[in-house]
Length: 406
Image 1 (tube, one colour):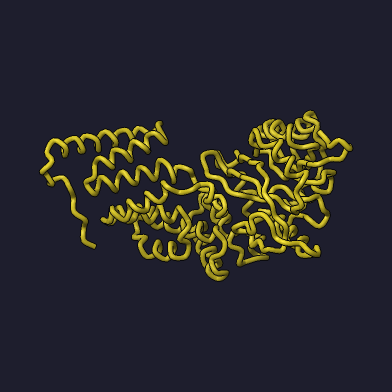
Image 2 (image 1 turned 90 degrees about the vertical axis):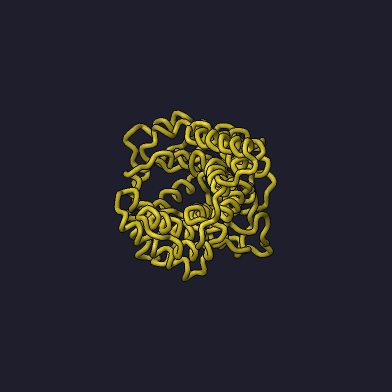
């Protein structure tokens, strides 16, 4: 698919290695969107290169150098389109977004476009830059968790008269007003994190450690190092990485959302060890009041320590979250946090307050959101029976608990 004058509007750029399982689905999802597919194969032994070629992609073999940016830039160098979409084999273009996206590309004066991105099945989405101009000045940086936004910003600042448009900022990227940004209706769904991959963690570990040797204050790398270590069973090393990430985040003014995620993990570890997380949780929520996992942890702590009314307010706030607005904050969450988990917590809080009607309704909402969980049905039935008993004896207050002191 090309423009009427024969020009190439959009190139898809992929780097692959042993992606035979995922690659056919990715290529099929690109069919109506792009004009060409460029694949750089870094050493596949499972036939990935042949799969790509049979789907019409232009395939190049590029030896793996241990640098993701180098591989991605090799793919960019081979693209002929006015615009480039970078995508991985375990990602899919969501159906129904191709035509509208191409219309945006034909008229936009932006350098980079934000698209919707869902990082795992069952998670909320956020905005990410995946579409950008085919310009030799726009290239990826860093050997792991590579970034293209800084190059787009530099190019924007270098162009006379360039002004910020569109969303204004991308949370977590340090984006300033120097580049031109817009939005496209494209949405990508990522499948690769649906199953944990120890091999991925083993591959990433030395790259992350090398990146920290160069940039010891990088919050996102500390967080991801903790994830990799935890995935390989090194819980002590993971905790140390998250502590370092939390300190680095404080040093830079807590501007990166992954600083909050370092604190989320530290609170989780504290709870799992049976320790009191109150002090850590208070400090974490003060630093990152908008991190919804910290809100959820705080609500559970309030419930466990005898303040169900405050817990109920926090759970209700989670259930009422505007997911469209949430997408601008740069983090994705398990969607159950705003659905079944929030309703379940609200049910527990209402039950503790003796409001069994409200508890039954909340458990019913949790059951509707996640019908496969038998526990929600059991709780709903128990709360409904309590509500019925109270209705039968309206003057009784024996079953209504009082708030525990402290």
